[in-house]
Image 1 (cartoon, rainbow, N blue to C red):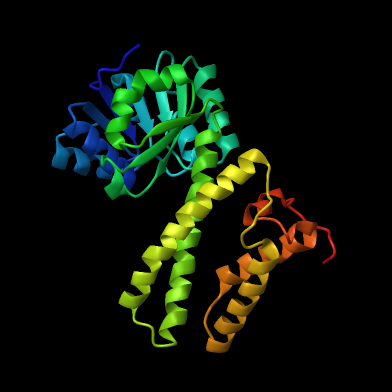
Image 2 (tube, rainbow, N blue to C red):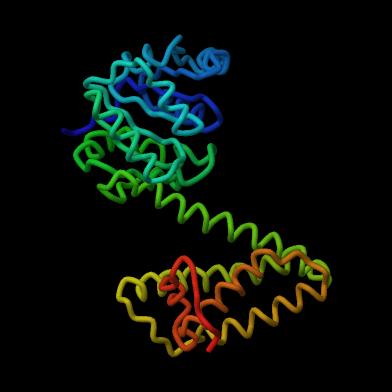
Length: 296
């Protein structure tokens, strides 16, 4: 069924993210009802934005064609849905959780006659409603396509990543982890280069070039993992390890914090120890969760 993009929507949870979602949907023409565990937050949001605040989660769900859940965790979702009639209701779960939790909540909803789509948000509240904003979804393609006209209002780069309910949670855990680790590593780098008198504007000039290298490296690694081909005529794991051992010495000599550089150096050492020293960086994907190998 095609989605007109205009529907009655409930938003459960009016923290920073839930409030941003409710505002964007209301401004786009949706009729929005909100509910929050702390009722005052929902009432203030309704007063500011012309959004209706429901007294209970059950009232909000009963009002809506589709309910977006933006509560703190899966336990709060289960508590909110206690005693709520979900028969015939469509629930889109945007709560941060594990793949198993997303699937478990799907079982809860469908066992009570509802329809369920799992989702996750790749960004910050200010990204909601932006063309660059991205939310990822997993579950029924039929449900996603039915709701797509409404869901893309929350982010222009939104997409269905898998028909397995845990797919969205896995995607955000992976890419969210990557993004925050990258930012935090850069923060470590700033502290280090400042100890050698490097101005941050000069660092920024070089950073633009390095980000291009990161982008191409990500694409190349994805191709290698997809093909299962880790041969390389560029720098191999053993070369990376030697370089990062030198980097670690430099950080240590400067008295700079190097937690993430240290973790990467350990990961490279594990790759070499596992026999991938002459392979591409992407060969790190082959490492088992726990290693019991000798350096070779």
